[in-house]
Length: 287
Image (cartoon, rainbow, N blue to C red; front, side):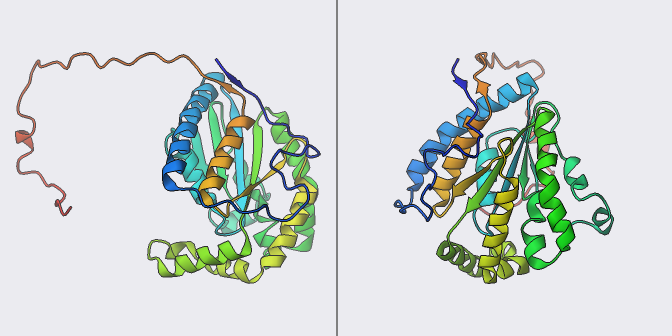
């Protein structure tokens, strides 16, 4: 059985694909759907193996997804979870805090969603709202913001010391691609719900969000809770790269699988069970 080892989590270590000289790498041609689906099929098979191992070993993991608006967080999470059990891969996407939650300790409402044994929790945005939208839009005080940056490394050290694997992703999209995606949402009735007033404001405040990101990285990129940047100008490549990295970040082994045999269907007590549905209400067959 092949073993999959953890990635190096030292922030001083440069990944083989990191942009060590800054700037954006040269864009490859957009990945074709057929190629994408072929690679995604392989990764989905590995995610099922990971799922089995996490249940078998009682492992716990948290995966945080942050990034630019329209960077593809939801699509990446969907690509990860569409072929695995929601009982193992739990997605948490919290709404705006209630009046009661606003009076609680800031991280309190997130802790209640942390994993038990045999679970991986995917946060579609997380406690890092305070370092991003809350800071930029003035939804928190300067004191609250500075306190967050100070205590977050301590909080995340407590998470990892408890045995939980913590993986943090920042999905990054360039300015032109973000604008293209925003405009596509305006004209696509399936996507208009994705374009909120906060999205429009983030479009107008690109550099404010960039500075907030940089300050967040400086304060919270630690050896035990490292930030991993995923380029998502090409959504398909970004999803595949993120899933491949996730698989390399949680050690797992393939468990032996028993061959399933359906056996022979019993005819005992057979009757016309389709005819017994006569007179019931069916959904009209419009298609």
